[in-house]
Amino acid sequence: MLKTEFQSVFDHSKKVSHPYFLVLYHPNQLNHAKLGVIIGKRIAKTAVRRNMFKRIVRESFRTHQEKINGFNIIVMARQGYNTTDKQKLREGIDRLWEKLKI
Image (cartoon, rainbow, N blue to C red; front, side, top):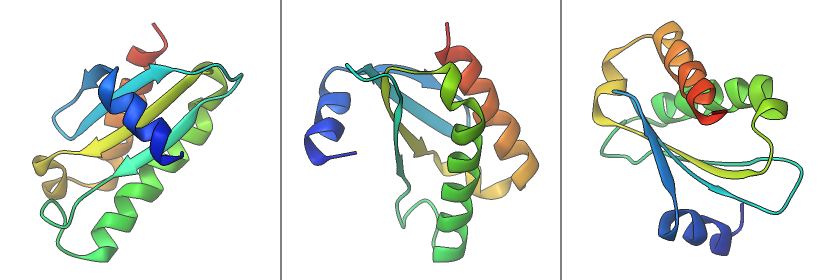
């Protein structure tokens, strides 16, 4: 996503939350969804953990992308995500995509 698209989502977003994630979304005029992933160094100290988070979110997004067309989406990590395993993270983000489709 471009900087202006990120800013548009932050300014006019709706939210869906989970203990490990916060998803901000805003409709776009396209036939497909766009994804942005944000995770700070304060949340995950090592690049390995930050990249793992991004991989899990992107893979889940790819599997649900055709069902959530027409949105700019930003996924942000929350503090508690760092204490869980990959399977629980994947289940959590999959549940958020289901909420987003409504």
